[in-house]
Length: 94
Image 1 (cartoon, rainbow, N blue to C red):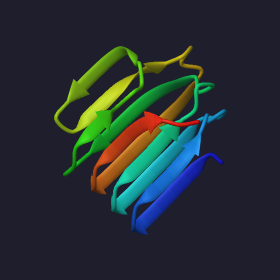
Image 2: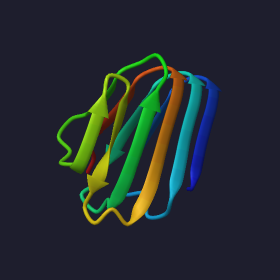
Image 3: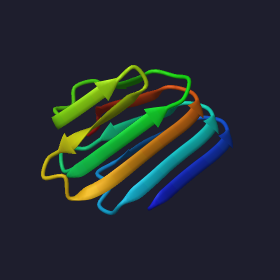
C-alpha cells in the first residue's frame, strides 16, 4: 500500500511501510502501529488535533503542538500523514 485516504472517518493501520506512503484524512483521526522493521522518515501534521508518538524512538525529532517529524530506523522511506480535523497517533506494532 502506498496511500490511504478518508473524507469522513478514521484510518487505523499496522505495518512497516516498506515504500513511501501518504495517509490523509479530512474528518477523522489516524492511528498507525509501526512494526520493529519500519525504517521511515515521518512527517505528520494535523490542523486541529494532537500529534503523538508513544513507544517509538525517533531520531532527529522535531515536534510542535500539531506536528511531528523524525526518523525511525534508517529513515529509508517517507511516511507523510495529514489530518484536517483529527489526531495522529504513532504506536508500536507487532
